[in-house]
Image 1 (cartoon, helix red, strand yellow):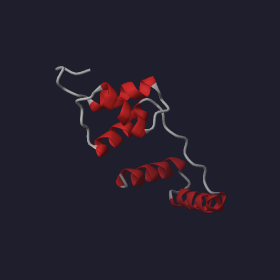
Image 2 (spheres, one colour; image 1 turned 135 degrees about the vertical axis):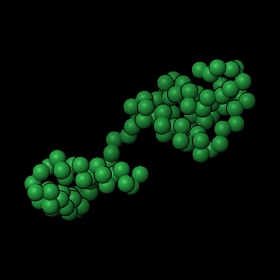
Image 3 (cartoon, helix red, strand yellow; image 1 turned 180 degrees about the horizontal axis):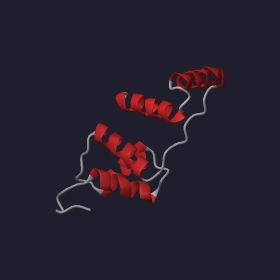
Image 4 (spheres, rainbow, N blue to C red; image 1 turned 90 degrees about the vertical axis):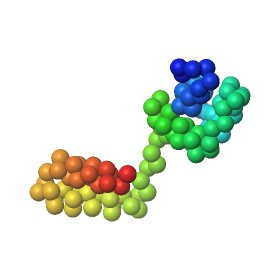
Length: 105
């Protein structure tokens, strides 16, 4: 996992915990890490980030929440308007949405 036995790799330890039990929550992973690596003292925020990243890498994402039906009409209307602003080109509309997503991260 690491080059030196003194080194601690939080991402690797988190991956080990999630591979052992993909249903572990963040706090459960932290307890697993503390029990397997007693000398490790990772910060809470580092554990949260490692948990999130490793779940994503292992494909353990939660399903997205369905759209609220009251908002669905508004979303579809906005999508239709965006496509019309892009001269009916759905690819241009998709590129515009991707650009907006990149700006918001």
